[in-house]
Every structure is written in C-alpha cells, then in structure tokens.
Amino acid sequence: MHQTLSLYELNGRVREAIETGMDGEYWVEAELSDIHERGHCYMELIQKDERSRTPVAKARATCWANRWLLVRSYFERVTGQELHAGMKVLLQVRATFHEAYGFAYNVTDIDPTFTLGDMARRRQEIINQLKEEGVFELQKELQIPLFAQRIAVISSETAAGYGDFCNQLANNEYGFAFTTRLFPAVMQGERVEASVIAALDRIFEVEDQFDVVVIIRGGGATSDMSGFDTLALAENVANFPLPVITGIGHDRDESVLDLIANTRVKTPTAAAAFLIDHLAVVYTRIVKAQEAVVDSVRHKMEVEKLRLGRLEDKIPVAFSVVRTRQEARLEQLRLQLIAGMRGKLAAERHRGALLAQRVAAADPEKLLGRGYSITLYKGRVLHDAHSVQPGEEIETKLQKGSVKSIIK
Image (cartoon, rainbow, N blue to C red):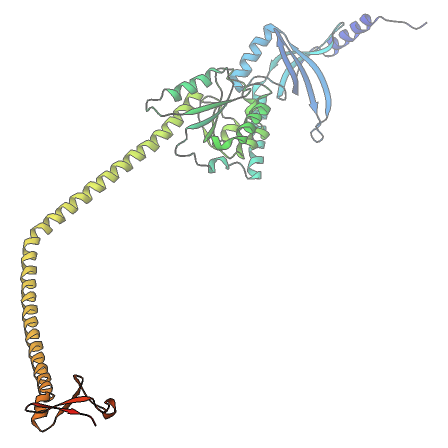
C-alpha cells in the first residue's frame, strides 16, 4: 500500500520546506493588483509581460498591523502617495506557508524610492506622449475671459475645500458677483479618472453657460494624487474648450493634470483668490480707462474753452471790419442800383418819345388835314363798298365838318 498523508500533514511538510529552504528575506519587484486594509494590510501582487501585458505571476502578501502602520506612514511621507492598485512597488518579504491559508508573502518593508522612480518614469512617459500628440500646450493657449464669473466646479460635494472655495468667492472684498455650479466627482482613489472625465463631459454639454472650469480637491487625504496622473484624464483636459484651473495639491505635489491645465494653483482657496484677482485686474483696467477718458475730455474742454476765449476777443474787431466792409458793399450796390435805375428811366423815356411820335403820326386829324376823308357806315369805318346797299345812309368826315349821303 502507498503511504498516505493528510492534507494538513502535506501542507506542514511544504511549510517546513519553505521555512527551511527560504528562511531569509527577499526584495521583490511587483505591481499591486489589489490592496485593502482591515487592521492588517492584504495585497494581491502581480507581474505582467512587458509586451503583452498578460499576467505571468501572481501571489498574495500580508503586512501585519504593527508593521503596517510604520511602513505605510513612511511610504506616504516620502512619495506623497497612498499605496493603491496599479502601483509598482519594491517589497521586502519573507516566504510563508500556512496549513489552512496556503502560501503568502509576509511584507516587512516597502522601499518608497523605487515607487518614486517608477512614478516619475510613468509621469514622464505620459508627458512625452502628450507632447507627441501636440496637446501638451493646448490649454495654455486659451485665454481666460476678462469677466470670468461663471464657474463650473469639479469637486467632491462634501469636500471642505469646495465650501471654502464658494465662501471665498461669495465674500470677496470687491463685491464681485460669481456664479458657481458643482459637477460632483470622486477626488481620490481609483475612480478619480473616470469620475472627473464624466464631469467634464457633463460640462461640455452646456459649455456656453460657463467661462472657466475649476478642478479642486481639499479636505481628503493629501497623499492620494495618483488619479490625477493618468493619460486619459490629461488628454480630456488638454482638449477641453474652456480654460481649466486646478487646485488639487499642495506645495510639493504637481500632477500631470497640473502640468496640462491652463492655470495651476495650490489649493481651492488659492483658486478662488486667483479668480478674484483676475477680475480685480480687469476692474482696475476699466477704472483707469474711465479716468483716462474723463481726463481726455476735461483737457479737450479746457483747450476749447481757451480757443473760444480767444475767438471771443477777436469777435468785436472782426465784426467791426465785417460791418465796415458790408456797409461799403451796400453803398456800392446802392449807387449801382441808382445808376441802373437812371439808365433804365432814360431808356424808357426815349422809348416813350418814339411811341408818342408814332401815335402822333397816325392821328386821323392829321390825315384829314391833308385832304383825306373818313367814311363811316353805322358809326364804323367803311372799308368795302359792297358792304352797303342802295338807299342806306353813310357819313363822310372831313377836316372841317361832315356830310351824309344816300347810296343809289
């Protein structure tokens, strides 16, 4: 008969073999495919083929609570990031095998400098790709409108930073009126990329209602910035038609999203201050322009007043000269008129004399004096002998007297 072992016995031998053959600690490079914390920290490690990106190795790892507190605190302090799925890590592990729970690595340390290097490499790869696509500077080419008062805000609805942002805008010292509309999004963790992109899509549908987009983050964990270092989110922001202002980190944090945005500030309150200052600069320009216009008009009025004063002094002299000239002209016209009238009267007198001579020459009395007579028929001059009938009476006028005749 074959020697048989219980599963527990076989697992015990495996545990002894591992503890004997691998009794030391090892530094291992891996990618976190999953991580969750319940006092202890439980990780799923994975290695992918560089070309196909298909998994070639998987393992479970555990960091016990007493060690995890120290490891996590140091890692976040150095990297400014929380450990999350998709992150490359360098772990110090000890191989363990438990009869009931199977094989796992016990994590005793995590090297944050390795992750920093990988993060920097991945960030630079994203930046290089954005530059190759020609979109890295697109947001910088957009001009923030002079009167940027309609603000689309992407933030967590419960974030303290969002409330600070709105309060600072509402209570600005100049009394400027801003309108804000929140487009809620998840601002930390693995859902940042998809959530912020979805918010951008909603804003795009009503883009004509806004002047700028503000992406702010505050009140949460300041170490979890990985969601803002993704290619998809950077491409969406780079190609967005409105200027995008980011206020998602602090002094030492600068994400790819910050680099691609139109304007990057440190915090939500700094974003509000930027918008207020931008409008204050515009207001100052308007006031200065107004003052310049007033000064120009005032100067023009003073110049015209002086010119009118000079004209006023010249008017009496000019009027006297004009009056003298006009009086002389009127006198000349009067004399010309009198001379003209005299000439006209002389001509009319001569014409009248000629007409009188012609009338006198045609006077019937003169004709009668020369031996002519005038025959009248019924009181009218008789021109045609056939106009009278026998027995009718005609009258003949002579120089002295008249005779009446009967026609035979």
